[in-house]
Amino acid sequence: MRGVGTVLFLVVLATVVATGARRWRIPAPSLLVVAGLAVALLPGTPAIHITPEIIGLVVLPPLLYASAEEITWRELRAVWKPVSILAIGLVLASAAVVAYVASVLTPLSWQMALVLGAVLASTDPVAVTALGRRLALPPRVQALVQAESLFNDATSLVLFKVAVSIAVASSAVSWAGAGGEFTVLAGGGTLIGAAAAGVVVLIRRRIEDPVLETVIALVTPYAAYVLAETAHTSGVTSVVVTGVLVGGRSDRLTSARIRLQLHAVYGTVIFLLESVVFSLIGLSLPSLIRELGDGDRMWPLYALALATTLIAVRMLWIFPLSALLQRKGQTPTNWRVPVVLSWAGTRGVMPLAAALSIPVAAADGATLPGRPLVLVLTASVVVVTLVGQGFSLASVVRRSGIALEPDHTEREEAHARLSLADAGMRRLEEMAELEAVPEVVADRLRRALEARQEHARERLGDPDSAAESAEYVYRQLRRDLIQEEAAELQRLYDDHRISDTTRRRLQRALDLEEARLADH
Image (cartoon, rainbow, N blue to C red; front, side):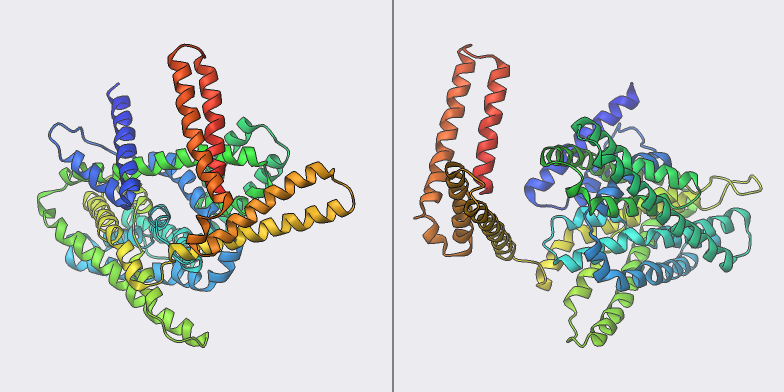
């Protein structure tokens, strides 16, 4: 019962903090980590121990899948060259430099320092996506940051497995074997992910049951992950590929009603998982610190040094790369985007899951030295980057000047709405000329499309002229009437003149109408 109570407490805590973060426009991952750390330091708080199975099997697949669904093939084709360089070259460079710094600065052996470097080498897709949702980044920059964080895990995972085998068995490095393992992990994960996506698309095209659609959508990332891990390939890569392929076709697989339901259910699941996992990072750090030996008391300085090293390596890699790509593209050198890309390299759930999977004992049965320090340093670097970079990333984006202004987004949407209404009007006129539509029906459709056109032109024009629009006045008056109708509905229920079922049904109808008024 205590374990169940702890889980429920975590869910409540994470939900409250994440809701507050949205309301106050604060990055939720950063605030959740701070809240978890604050709760863990309170007297009487039970020690929280996270197992790699909880993160790797329960939490990661749906979060990775949701991140991958947000990227389209068009965006990937536009950024695949820099993403490839960052996903391989920057990961190798980060691992090497961090391993060197750790072996010189900390009591870790060079084998365990290599493990630590491999763990911290890649950025975290869950943290990057969660932080990026609230930033008005240009689409290309957002796609570059997310794609890098999604596809650099295969490189990091191969490095990690090689480093752990060296630390556990003290075997020599076989770079040819490492290259083959990378091919198996990345290539096998890609094939299994593509196959899983194909099966899911075939199934969802033949199903129109909202419950089954929801179940399939929730099971898909777990199926892709388990199949790939069972085949000894990369489950992370499999989930990412499945998410990209299915996400690009999701609008053509189901009806609008089912899409609305899927969006609501999946959004709730992702919100809860993200909230809990980031609070767990903060909650687990104090218990990890208690397992350190007396010779590891300088860990705060080690963690700061390693976090600074990661940021410095990222900057030293991205700035020359950006200058080279801009020179080849014959465009003036612009340092605003590299600054944002450099500062967006946060660590999160993935490094912690990898560190927790480090074996406790070596091949000879002896306790693996340095494992507690690696866990503490990993969790500490994750906290430092999530808090330091997370809280300041919005300011960096704003000062860089690359953030899209709200007016830009609103005008783009208004132009699109006007184009859609124009297309509908043209098709309606064609059908009316062919007398394929009754005149009464055509008039009704025409009035609806004209109202949408008028509303779009209002948003593109002078705001003062909108106040004089009949459509604008209608919407404002109708909202007032809906509020009065809702109050009357509540009075009927309070006077026991209607049942709760009737009240809920009518309230939902009023809510849907109000939402449509806000959307037009």
